[in-house]
Length: 157
Length: 302
Image (cartoon, rainbow over all chains, first blue to last red):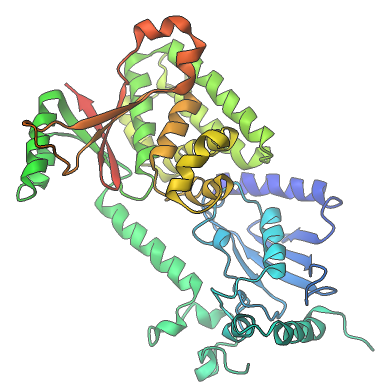
């Protein structure tokens, strides 16, 4: 508990320092609870998520960093490896390939990379995965872009 | 599109909380989080059976385990008991090699009070730190693990405030907040060494997986619970400069007469080159591990 708190405090300081270096990620710690974080990440360019801003929620366990943080999308996203309803993310580093070498910041980077490079063979969103697996990249992109517009962009007028 | 794996059949999957309370009515309802929870529940169950590091047991307890087993194994255990007095088991949680190494090494320091060895390994530890830095690891991701190991090392030496007894060493080795941190320290050290000498390790790693050296370190060395192979042992032994003897208790045998238990000494690559005079004083490794397919325990020579 004490160890995880100390580690998170270091990450907090690092985040303040990295703010400029990584403008695509805005990681914020809850005012009253260092085990709760949220992040705003920019959809990577040349993907259907470009132009969107996606919110992630982090719940950090007491055994952190020996155990991974729980991360989910709060913003709706159409992506093979993100559960359409719960926002749960299928990413190896959040499960069995986790190690303390990762940080909340680098997890955000990994999620951005996952957005750009979906893994349709281990889908949490089968509809999305099936579109890609059947070779319908256009169908996937237009669905993903539609949800980006609907959920991840500021509403116009 | 509407119907995501029928998850919303009862219409309550909409709320985030309901996935936590999902009932066992269908495997389809098992989310990754549930699987993680179940996995950690199994770990807790296992934990109750075997501590991270067990008590010292006479070698006869090994014999009892194979009472109705393969005659080759029984014969080999008999051979073993000629040279070894006791065994200390470790939990089979994928960290057994690192855990065995941890206990065996610290116990050796505690009993030998070998200050020269402590000074020597500290130099190596600092080099490992530099290796990780030069590989681009963020300092704060590994420094806590390094600090905790150095702390244990310090307290194994008697005569200062933090000195510990053998009993306390056993307690600490069973305390997850210390034991797992030291294991993780070894995983960082191992990973750093493999990456630093990637051209040396690459052919071995290619024989184990299809991935790159970097992928191997990220998926098979750094994560807790990933089992150790020869590659891990060579890298750890080299990085810390600590020789390790491993005895192999398996069903292999040869036709030519008596059975023997194969062993292999992992001798740090660097020591041979570094000190020319060392060749004359090659020591038997003070760490002896017993390998049975899939698991490492600690052995005590007679």
